[in-house]
Structures are given as structure tokens and as C-alpha cells.
Length: 137
Ligand code: HEC
Image (cartoon, rainbow, N blue to C red):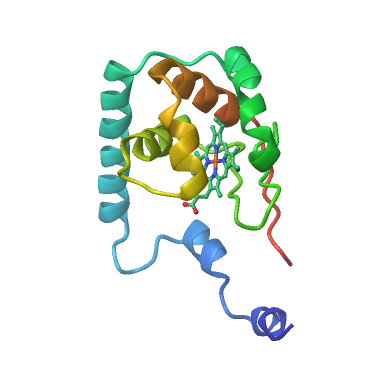
């Protein structure tokens, strides 16, 4: 409640502020660097990973649905939403769980059984889901 009141008193909303004006601190350069890094990362992934098949991923996602739902919306508070997440990020996280670089009791076990093709298909499926974002007033 107090947050809403603060916004109404005319403080620039952090996100709208970014949209409206890049700001005087010259944020263009770091953002450009980020975009370049993201493009490079995507290019690297593009060369090593086969493109996933979203329809095959939809089938394979049946093993994920008890926690993430078939639509990627987490069904428990400890389960993150993965629907609409980028293919790059999903692939990266699933491979990190599989290799042990990222550890979480349930995901580490599940990912250890996934092939590169499974991961590509699952990432293609969950990233193909469209989601909408609504900001609070
Ligand atoms: C038994 C419940 C369960 C099942 C089944 C399950 N997950 Fe998860 N998943 C989790 C939990 C809990 C986390 C959060 C892990 C953490 O806290 O780091 C998670 C995290 C993830 C993340 C990382 C999301 C992020 O925002 O970083 C991805 C991607 C993911 N799961 C994909 C899958 C896929 C694909 C399947 C099916 C092959 C699957 N999960 C099956 C419970 C589950």
C-alpha cells in the first residue's frame, strides 16, 4: 500500500524511467555491451546445439508437469515459472543441472536423465509459450 502511494506522489517509475529516457549516466554503452555479449552467446549456442522440436518437447514435458505445469507455470512456491523463458536460458540451466554446475535436489536428478536432444526439445517447447506481463498500477 505504501508502495502505491509513493508511486502516486510522482516518483518516476524505475522501468518507465528507463523506457522514457536512457538517463544522463550514459547507460547506452553498457547496454550495447550486454546486447553484444548476448548475441555472441546466442551465436555460440547456435553452432553447438541442434534446434529443438517444440512438439516433441511438449510430449517430453509431461515429466515436468507435476511441478512446472505443461504451460511452464510453477505449481508450488519453490518451483520457478519457465514458460516463455528464453530457449538460451532454459538450455543453459538444464545443462548446468545435468553437469552438476547448478544443484537443486529435484532438478539435478531429473536433468541427469536428459539427452542433448531432450534438452533442446524441452527448451523449444517451454520457450514457445507466450506470456503476458501486467505491471501493477
Ligand atoms: C519434482 C518437481 C520438479 C520436476 C518434475 C521438474 N522440475 Fe524443474 N525445477 C524444480 C525446482 C524446485 C526448481 C528450482 C530449483 C532451484 O531452487 O534452484 C526447478 C528449476 C528448473 C529450471 C530453472 C529455472 C530458472 O528460473 O532458473 C528449469 C529450466 C527447469 N526446472 C526445467 C525443468 C524441466 C524441463 C523439467 C522436466 C524435464 C523439470 N524442470 C521437472 C522442480 C521440478
